[in-house]
Image 1 (tube, rainbow over the protein chains, first blue to last red):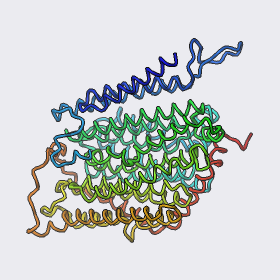
Image 2 (cartoon, each protein chain N blue to C red):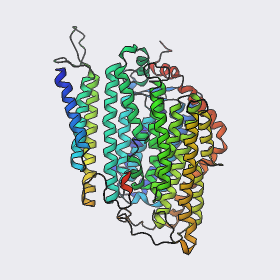
Image 3 (cartoon, chains in turn brown, green):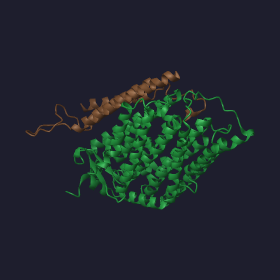
Image 4 (cartoon, rainbow over the protein chains, first blue to last red):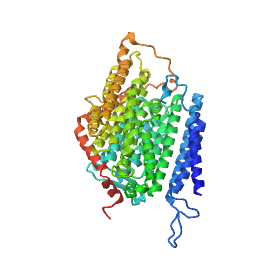
Length: 117
Length: 518
């Protein structure tokens, strides 16, 4: 399972980074989403991988339990990345509709400001 | 527990939704509440700064959960200083935004500003690494809204870049936190410090990866080369009063570097000793050099000031990267100075742009050109670090602190050459914009506006009595810079005590984990 898990994180990250390097906003946003999925899955693993174990201690018997904190972290991270994706979609839409162009690098910049932008 | 400790987070968290939900159609009421909230924040942070000045570390346990299990807010000298700086800057920005009418050019300016303050103040207060991430997100999401306030194609496009860059930074932050948690099993900063110090040297490979990833995240926030690419465009295209408030955001990155790499990965931790300073110092020197060249090469005043802000981050991070108490004290003094100076210049740049556009070429004189030229002159002196203002004192302190470092000649050369180039760049801009406008032979017609006119909504004429407010804000910043220069001695005493507190992390750890009581 470890290999499956690690390769899932790796593939998601690689695909995310590839898409982020594209020059139009839509693939970049998709890439950000993939990257945030990779991060969320990765966060799960930071509490060690456990199967079929509840995230609570049992005071009546010695049973296996999984670390609850990464689950709380992942929940927070999911909420935040969901909200952020919504924001970036809206801003990108606004930029596309007002500039009639969805390049991410502001290429029409005639004063050479695009070099460092 | 001292409940005043959480007030800087709770107060804006209440006022901002109140402004959105109840006052959304009443601009004047929004202004009153926003201003009142900012003044209250200034008063609260002033009280907290007085409380923290005696060297005690106050801890606020949320929900009364003890430290490694619950989230804590921690107030020490460093936090108190940054809180006070933030709320003071915010007051000037709010005054300016009201006076210049910027807050009327789009919706929800004041609510977003209060949310932004909540995020920044929370980031300075928190003692939990994951909570730091959450406050970073709060301040970022508010800054996205502020950055595109007023709209316009160019500003939205720059906004997309800014958001994408910071979302990448957030993903990296989570990866770094996950790695640290996997190694240590905790995210409370004091607890992290204890566990990291106890790790056996063989188990530190992942820890070093986490430490460097965390440094990258903070370097993005602090706009360190080569991660500074988001800053010039964002700051130049953002509404400039907002850019003035953003002057504190880069300092959040510097603060986080200072906090994490003195407390958790301190100079005494074998696993990461020297790791951070060795990388950060050359990067900071490059940042300073590129920033200075950018100042010289800018053709637009907003971009000029943005590169000036990068220059000052370079100087600041050189001092941070030395990681000695003396250098840290100098860095803190320079933090206060550079935040105020950058904000002042952004506000002046806005005054100029409102009157004649931002291009650095000679044009007809604008209204109140003498007053604005004087302000620009003062701001440029402060930014470039010339006597008699506090920038000179700050740079002198930084250079003095670098005296014993092995790279001292390189550091001095970079700082001095960078200052010279910055002076030339600012002087060129000042003479083009202000002096040559009185000489007909120099005046060129403005180049056709580069698709920039749609970002500048023509300002509504402000009421005559409101027109003084922008200048009040500017002169308040000038006044604080002058005070910072006059009281440089007491200020250095405070920052020296702060640095001493930072380099003795046991004070912080004992207070948070209540080790004295056990």
